[in-house]
Length: 299
Image 1 (cartoon, rainbow, N blue to C red):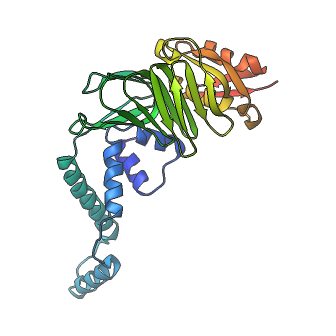
Image 2 (image 1 turned 180 degrees about the vertical axis):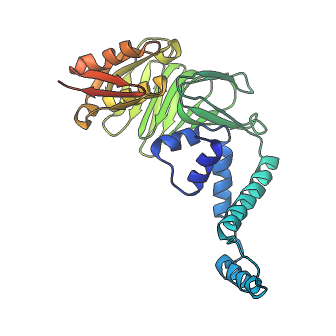
Image 3 (image 1 turned 30 degrees about the horizontal axis):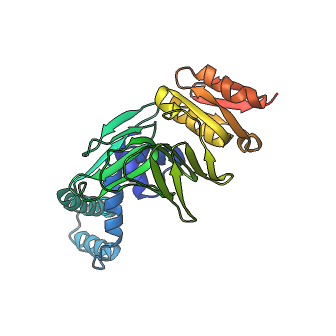
């Protein structure tokens, strides 16, 4: 779908779930949302567009001229000009830096202090270069593996919680209502609305609808997805399927009864058939593929 059409449907609050995800992956997504938030707080003088157009329509009719209704065009133009004005104002004063990945894509970013972030598929980060030396703050949507250089406090902010460190290596997965933090080196502090937890190397914290708590993670030195495979331990099948969809750009249908089952295992990012077998066999499910749609079912 064209970018302009996505923006129009977002402004009209008409995006489907897949379209919303595509909109969030736009390079300018964070700028658009900041503009939208700013517009909501603007105090705009009351202007009755319909009444003014009706008066104009009456005056023109008096001259017996042909009239073409300008209502929809004026509304679109007004919104566009307001949007453009706020966008310009924000872009002039904002130095925010954004990075995002698409389906089946990974990207490694070097931050101003030489810390590195590796983004998994369908993920994004943003940070402010101007204030970086004083405040090392990163906003994350999706999943990322961090190697943080020693220095001042480093904060990763997500919709489900904040992770605070000084210098360490850790992975954060922040997907909808699923929040997963694994510490690989050093220690991190995880703060959510419900609690605050300190993780040391080898510790894992998860918070979701079905699972909440701290456990001991695998002894591996980095997340499996950085090596082109996704590993899970007692994870709801719906989360596993969602990750497969991001890695292969497919849509998977599965009965909700199976979606709540817990999965422990690994699937590859290199072959979708092998990946589907890895997911379906433990639950005695079979799969069928039709273009970009996959159906999991039990015979």
